[in-house]
Image (cartoon, rainbow, N blue to C red; front, side, top):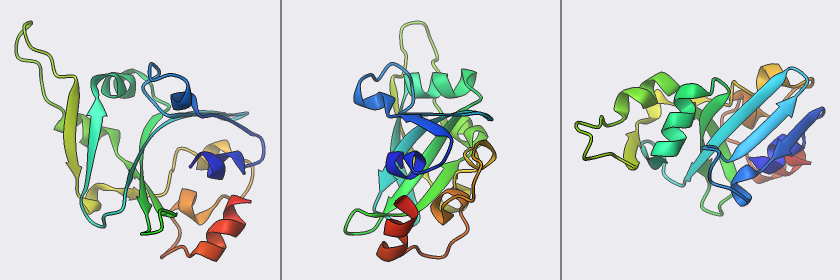
Length: 153
């Protein structure tokens, strides 16, 4: 996803998770029209995806309106073939609740059914000045390797 975002005109991309886990997201994107903060989870499975969300990621989601959870579905050769967004309202409803001051959850396993996913990364589209990749807009059927090479360059 980092390479896909870096290929967009007028966008600065920082892969913050390569140097710190404190932000609560993996990628920061800045454009003239605004910012996006993306937590990225990947899977090779179709249908239901299982992810792990940290407490820090969840709390960042709650306070940061630019935060989005992006699911990347990978082909068997590990090339991305689909990007989807997990709605934050749905995700918040799945999180556990601390019952007492003596116990606090720090990580949560979440099964995300395919019908919950929203195709593409809608948070990117209003921030860019050009037509974006079908992976970002969600307007695709199945992206093949040759179109990925063209889109990413």
